[in-house]
Image 1 (tube, one colour):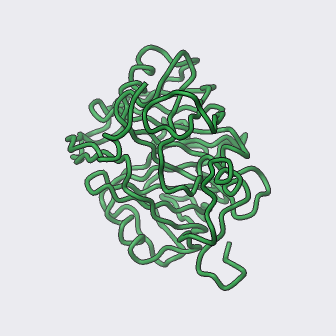
Image 2 (cartoon, helix red, strand yellow; image 1 turned 45 degrees about the horizontal axis):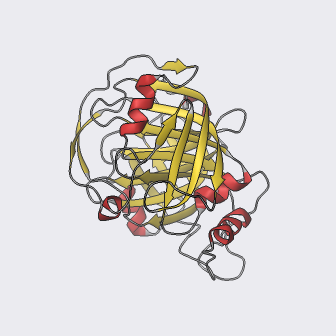
Length: 306
């Protein structure tokens, strides 16, 4: 949605403002969330061989997934459009959610440089690829991003497994992770809302997992509160964890609750949120890259684990 007051930037939506107030970090004025992509963002997306995405399933639940291709598979023919030359894999549980007219949230992240940009909008066309009409575009800081260098490798081609609950292998992947991604959406009818895809990072062990419940520290970030604002209005979430060694992808949906003033938790946690997993899928060897680890972000090293 275009700003109505002559500003080049969009306003935070109502629940983002509520989240900022609950956290004690309410911002004055607008920030650099644009209704179009600046040239540097358009050029950045074209450099990536993967794209983290959020889409809604038939019941409105966010699904988190990742699309892959050769560098250049994402192009921007104009500031209001992204063209993605890929479709989700057939066994991706999110595959059926890519429908013309559906909302989509996108996160481009270069693990080699820690640079990341987000773009949200709507799927204008789904054919041999995806055409996205951009509604929001903004950059994020480099905090909590661990560097890694990718090299292409073939995906395993193993069918996805539906999990009735998290098993030991899934919990081990989560407990060892230093990175995950979360899809969230604003509640129905909210102005300037939509789907969003976000990154979270920390030291291995920063996500606690007991049974089917994840405990996640919320470290200091850009203080936009896009994700927590969405979860405040609609607690449904989609998450994706990747085992960068094996290429295994773990995707699940769950309901989130937020503790705004926690007692305890990992060092650096300003808030805690928990996700109760309701549905999960494992795709072995599905991420078609071999990764060489670089280093932890300085902000990551300043935080604790469970």
